[in-house]
Length: 96
Image (spheres, rainbow, N blue to C red):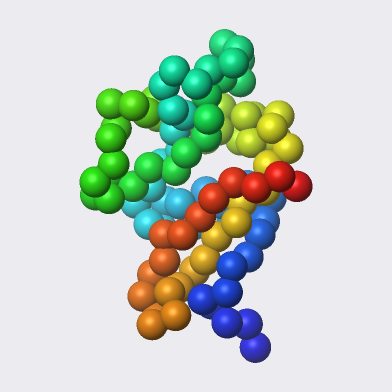
């Protein structure tokens, strides 16, 4: 039996997109961190109701997000639930 509060890692695009959208998030890059026009900016997941600073972010479409995700050779580390059973938004990008 799998504990949903344990962190998991995936590179599956469908799993990543579904997890983010299920939590009301969207993919973005941080403005001012672009290294190249094609794959510029540090990837982030933004949750609009999380109190972030959206002016610093540029929203990406899923195609551009996954192109950068693959170009950077990243994996997605995430958690489905907190230890007390609430939906978790914990996620980050890690090297494969």
